[in-house]
View 1 (spheres, helix red, strand yellow):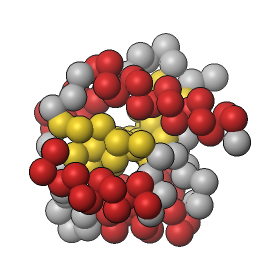
View 2: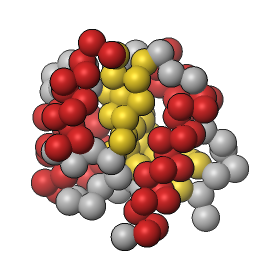
View 3: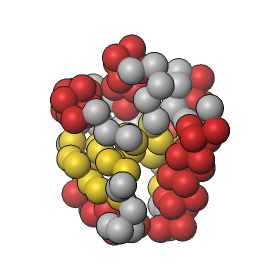
Length: 125
């Protein structure tokens, strides 16, 4: 069964890059959000196996969106995605419940490594 993934990033290019990194045989993209508010709404509505969440987004930043998702689902699988300049925010996100992170610019291999790690870790729990 394919793992369901929700992608939240305010730039079309980043969403497309994330989608192209994920094997459609293994993963199903069930939605895309362009801001933090929509990311939380879509997460609650669609209940994905994984949320890939950008830190810097309009309406609600990724840290606040992560906090809301974790309140709703304490076992949520969330990978944060951000520029190196937001490294302190990535650390904060991990402390608040994110399972892993990917630094922009990323390669497809970076994305796959993070996704596989999260699913492997959640299977072991």
